[in-house]
Image 1 (cartoon, rainbow, N blue to C red):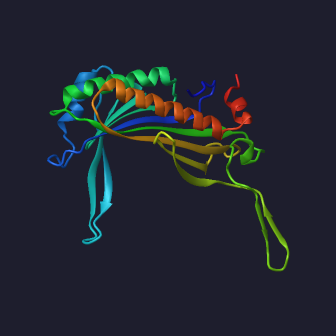
Image 2 (cartoon, rainbow, N blue to C red):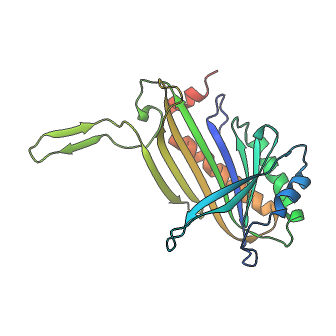
Image 3 (cartoon, rainbow, N blue to C red):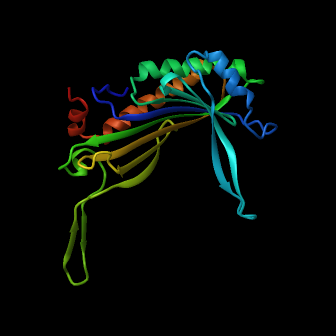
Length: 251
């Protein structure tokens, strides 16, 4: 389980469920967001719904098309956002993130409501849990002071025998792993443009994905979500240094 910090750096947490495709329904069922909103309660998710489009380019005709990608239902204050796509349902929690004990129940509540609003039973085939972290660090320290396993210093030797040395100034890398139990883990680390020029800011993006046989049992689905949460927390703790822990635990 991820450790609780006094100053959490989570910008957004997203839990996403992908269901068995429905070829007969090529577009998003636009009745679903409204039905889901009514089921969850308009007091909590007052709306209005927002449509998110994905712009694509037809390589043959070179035509630009805007396709409906998601319909979002924001909660009061936009603490949570439920999004419906074609064969996709997601629940996100925005900053300030107030812990798994508050995020998980809303995931369960939305999943409980889902079977009552879809026209036919939908089984889940992929589950994802992603944490997007923005670490704000004071100036004067190297990246390695805050993050583990970023990159060794630059060290090369030219043909004339002179040495070329360099200190790491910025990072931008993406790595993918498969765990022993078949979970896909995608880690992206990057240097960000700081909101306050004197500071340093870093992206720590941890995306965990589980492909599964078709499931409609809520307990089994939530068990997988819990496993992804455990993995994401462990990966985060591996990526940060004791200096970062001290920074996040500052009173």
